[in-house]
Image 1 (tube, chains in turn brown, green):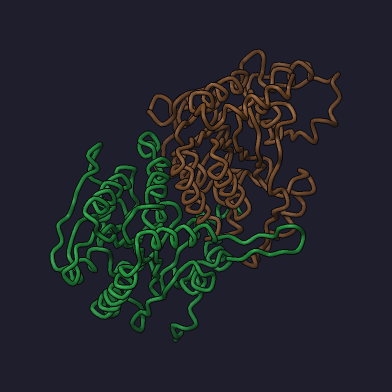
Image 2 (cartoon, rainbow over the protein chains, first blue to last red):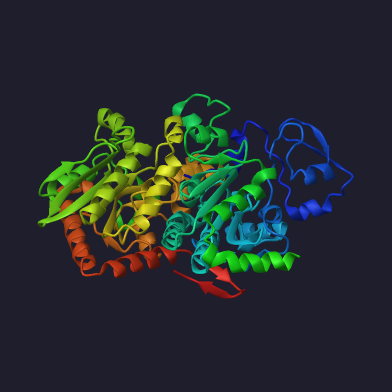
Length: 305
Length: 278
């Protein structure tokens, strides 16, 4: 069900890239080089950023934050964040010699500048409105606890209320152990919220990015109306190490990649990052109902001119 | 000699996993007037880790879905120790749709360490199979009562556990991951399972105090395996009572309450000081 952050690092064939949050990114000057975590190619930082942090040589898609995703996808200045003030609390009175949940939350919030994994809000692509909830894997391995579940559920409900699609960008190691059964139940919470979206016949588009495992993969992320994934993204229910221990044999490198799941009929398309905005824009247009959103679109397009 | 009231969470895990503990089929044999097993997912195979079927209880047609662990090694191999593959969850899904079509309440019995982690399970979409059941159960238009009879382990349990009522046997446990897996995830040491069992608040009493379990069914002294007839009788009474309560609700009430029940689970802080609880 759940996969530990450290475990994930272990079973990736490619060494994981040290995470660069958008915050830390700003501290890196443009005149430095970035080494690809997959092929070792050195790329000029500015060129790497312009390529949306995809290696120009091997095409490796490095992990980016929820903020960076929103910057890539949404129309300029269209994003309005919601529920940023939700913060996790130590529900269980989690005690262990090594772990202090409250302290960990506080330290991670301080480091990332966000309160939890998910950043959510309203946005548009080419003037077409949608709600978005995007994971930041850098925040405690993208783990799903009460705040995560609440923010995604609210995003889905807002989409239902506004009659617009919802886009979820999913990168997670699974449920957050420190919230125990409450973490597990977030899977059900988001599922009930999605029934409301289905009733107004608006689509849920799920984008799976590296890595997506456990409770997120085994709930809303895998039953969207459209499922997209980034090339090479590691996706699955159980982690590689858990499976290797169970079946006592090494798994092939291709196993549990986006391409593997495309072959096995679990996702609709593998889309390179450079095409993502255009692809999601296409989908929003394909589901657009002229009567309900034409006015809004006109208005926004006019606003850009 | 320790009395039952002094059991540690880890002791409860051992009781919940006791090989002599009554399993899904033990309940079905006694509670059901006639049980017709529905087998296979119509896509891939028949997963014996999950038992599904239709039956009558007090003259009323019901659908039953439960994890089934084996009572000996041979049966455990056949039933994969109660850990389903995707075809098990898809068989359960088929029976849920069946229950919807014929307006039968659904009784589920939860007893699994978790969904099976394997290459085959991944290839056939274990994550999708679990996720699909959560989504379908979220607004399935029939009453659903889930009972944790042994151990409830993670998404593999929840995949038949989104319900209008969650009942737990007194010594049952229900957790986001098995104590061993939790310890491995938290501290990279699965031998610390007993500490994880304590830290993660997995007992029926914990879940009841959180408002997640609706009812605890007391077990015979020494645990359910000490008096199988008594515990099956107690579970039967609890299910009848919940069924009759739920059957007084209109469909809208039923689904609204189910929505509210799950939508409210979670605790967090908003705008500095306000604490939202559920």
